[in-house]
Length: 279
Image (cartoon, rainbow, N blue to C red; front, top):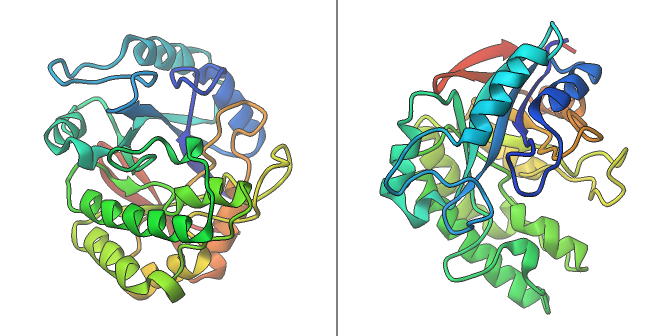
């Protein structure tokens, strides 16, 4: 069974400790045979790798680790280089220039914080009403981001829920409450040839006792994407350590198949290639 993990962090990311070569070995042990490293570049967060606003070159840490991984990784795994580009809608011109860099195969477009707000990870949630208001603003900014040609797939739609749930607020970004905004978001992605990520970081609890048992997006949004004609989907473990590298990818493929998807996407220089899901 072919498995690809297209959301993966190495120690090039401020919140991960393991090198690319070690992550590749750990992925292969879980049966994953293609990976794409998507380390953090968030324009408003200096802890992440920074590209631009004047120089648009590969960060040295990425170059060194990618070469090392290609030399040291075991046979049987295909390694690609990408980014998780955060908040591209906050600086669209810069984001487009990053996307135009020829060295990257794949870029995830993500939104970790709203304009003028901290990362959703750092917010103190005090009421469900506050959560709903932030969810509305989050979706509005995702719709902005969807219209900018600075990424290939949109990452973890519903990211903010991860931290709301962990503080005891069971907000859901689903079709019942947010159908209008979600339809606009999904239509915009489809019309612009962009895909979505099925993020499985919270799907299984093995090695992740804090996992919520959810995917991002939740399954009714995934189904709606398919109903609207969306067919570009990647699966990402969003792993930051060898302990969780590739965790949940197989289960993510199973969910895609159960919900009518026949193919998963991998990328070469921003062009999707489709691999049949064979369980």
